[in-house]
Every structure is written in structure tokens, then in C-alpha cells.
Amino acid sequence: MAERSSLSIAIVGGGIAGLTLTVALLTKCPHIKVTLYESAAAFGEIGAGVGFSPVMVRTMGMIDPRIEAAFIKCNKGNVNPDPPVWFTARVGDKRKKGVELGEESFTIPAREGPNGGVHRAQFLDELVKLVPEGVAQFKKRLRDITEATDGSGDAILHFADGSTAQHSAVLGCDGIKSRVRQIVLGDVPEAQAVFSGKYAYRGIFPMTKAIEILGEEIPKMPQMWLGYHAHILTFPIANGTLFNGTSTRKLLLSWLTRLQLSHLGRDPLGRIRTGWCRRLATR
Ligand SMILES: Cc1cc2nc3c(=O)[nH]c(=O)nc-3n(C[C@H](O)[C@H](O)[C@H](O)COP(=O)(O)OP(=O)(O)OC[C@H]3O[C@@H](n4cnc5c(N)ncnc54)[C@H](O)[C@@H]3O)c2cc1C
Image (cartoon, rainbow, N blue to C red; front, side, top):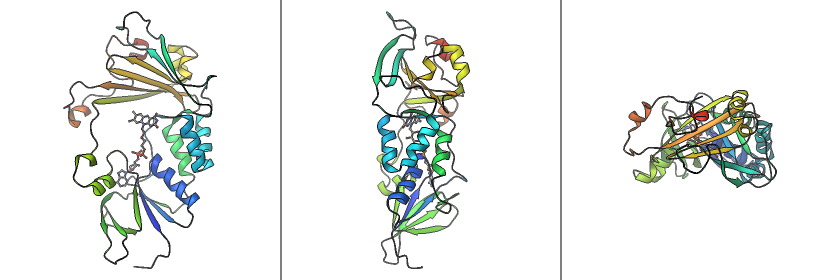
């Protein structure tokens, strides 16, 4: 094994967390050698939205101004009201008595500064541009980590393709079902992702269609439609050209298995019952 003069860090997982950490380490700690291992064949995100508060956007700038610039590039066209509002909560369920469907219930104020939704894939593409060539290795699914036997105290990463890599330390950014977390914590319940009792559907459609259904103003700002056992979040993404919706429902059957979940089917804004705001649920 060749002698390595400097600290060498392995980052496992190239999602938003892994890429941000990679950029941060490369910028702030240029003396550290960083290698990012991603199980997929290329960086990629699901085509839905993700929303960031002003504090998160400021934090991006503190990590690296180029990350904040990447966010702003993907967020242009989103409407920020004055004073700033994070979400407007509205009645989304017509079974609620004494209120009108769509009526504003309350607003959650936001701090000043850039904030709001971006298209995940678009934002990830911008982050990828900040990672120099050669830093990321693909098709590297981590299976195990063992301690090096050369007395260095290093970690040996074992990948599904049979290859290994030696690094001073390993940082897990491999998502909700993290293999790194399982290896570090061992066979304990804390190492496993736990079903929260809720499931979510996500859908995207053109902003022009959303305006047709909901009017000019509402689709362009973040909304939280509240109802019995469920809520729908909507906000603009892709520089205001797309309308992103996530509907979250509570499952009363908490024992539902993953297999059964996979049979719930596809439904852009959730299987919201008939009492729900039909303009959102059925169009
Ligand atoms: C419906 C929904 C809506 C959400 N909305 C928001 C929101 O508006 N705002 C917000 O801040 N957050 C939101 N979140 C949460 C947010 O999506 C996640 O917290 C975030 O995407 C996690 O990023 P990550 O980089 O940690 O993990 P991931 O994006 O899951 O990335 C993990 C990466 O690790 C790789 N990987 C996994 N296992 C291995 C392995 N063994 N070896 C090598 N690589 C591996 C994967 O391929 C993947 O690329 C939402 C989540 C959901 C489900």
C-alpha cells in the first residue's frame, strides 16, 4: 500500500448532502483528499421539488457562495411576498365545518432573503458542476467497512463490485436507509429506517395548468392545504414554470408492509378522499 501523506476522507452517497459536504471539504480543507462513492451509475435526483428556508440558503452561502448561487439560479421566478411568508395554510377539506374550502387559516412567516422551491434534479445538476472531475466514483455500493490491518487505523471500504478502498475516515451521506449508519451502530433498531405511519405522493405539472385551476396568485406561492389525516404542500419550482405538489396521508394501518405500500399505486396528488378540495385532488 502506497504511503499517503495527508488525510483522506471517503464520502458515501452523492445526494444533496454528499455533494454539499464534498464541495465544503474541497473548499475549506484543500489539504484533505476527498473521494465520493456513489452506488448509482451517475448523479441523479427524482424529478420533484425541494423547498429551502432563508436560513438554509444563508447556510449554503456560508459553506460556499457558489452553492447559494446555484440555489438562486434554480429558484428565479418564485414569488416572495412582502412581508415574507414561508407557507400559507389553507382549508383543504370541505368536511371542516364553519370555514370555506380554500380559506386562509394562518400564515407561517419567513425571514428575509432568498428561499423557496427548486427542482431537485436541476439543483443537483448545479451542485455536480462544483465537484471537480476525478473526485466521484460511481457504481460503488458500500457493503461493509473494516479496520485496516496495516496499523494505520484507517478504514477499508468494501464495495458490492468486490473492490476495496482505504481512507482515514468515512462520512456517511447515503440517505435514509444508510448502510454506513448500520455499520456504525450495529444491529440495533436505531440503525433502521422506521415507517412514520405516513406516506407521500408527489406530482408536478405545468404552472399554466395550475393557474387555470387555482387562479393567478395561489400556485405561485407555497401553500399548505390541511385536512383530516392528510395535508398537501404545493409550491412553484423550476424558476416558476412548474407546480410541485406533495400530498401526505396518515396510514391508520401502521403494520402495512412495504409490499402492500407498493400496491397503493400512482396518483399525482394522493388518494385524497372526496371530502378534499376537489380542485386539487381530482384534476
Ligand atoms: C416527500 C418528501 C418531500 C420532501 N421535501 C423536502 C423539502 O421541501 N425540503 C427539505 O429540506 N427536505 C425535504 N425532504 C427531505 C429531503 O428530500 C431529504 O432530507 C434529502 O433529499 C436527503 O438527502 P441526502 O443527500 O441525505 O440523501 P439522498 O438524497 O437519499 O442521497 C443518498 C445517496 O446515497 C446513495 N447511496 C445509498 N446507499 C448507498 C451505498 N450503500 N453506497 C453508496 N451510495 C449509496 C444513493 O444512491 C443516493 O445518491 C423531503 C422528503 C420527502 C420524502
